[in-house]
Length: 148
Image 1 (tube, rainbow, N blue to C red):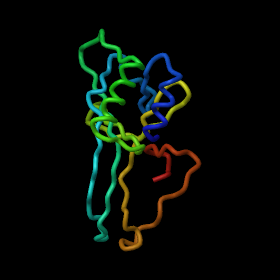
Image 2: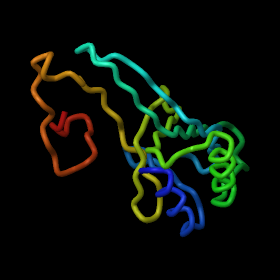
Image 3: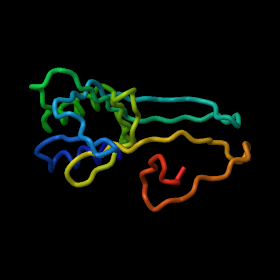
Image 4: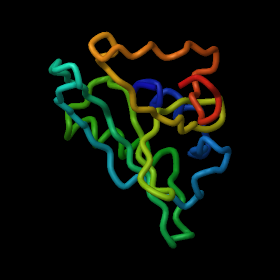
């Protein structure tokens, strides 16, 4: 999901909810503690220089049970972030602290935002003699699904 998409979805919501891959909801008292632009420059295992850039949303829950992030508050945080960081319409990744900090892609089911697991991969498959990933109909690659 790109920034323009989350902004559009927020225009039609009464509350902000995020669902974890196992179906649990991120607790309703979560905070968006930061929105950032992450630029990553790296060399893959085949020696190729690569560059990625994403917008990062960090979700955090604590013992502040009275806190509820409203749609308008999230829209305000996004607007300020766009102005201060000169954000482009980049893909969004989400960090969330569960048993460890997880990194997720973002999707939307018409009611809530879905945290979709990310996967590591070999980016130089041709140089490493690694077979391509199996194609699946389901965009979610979950453990045991046979897609990775």
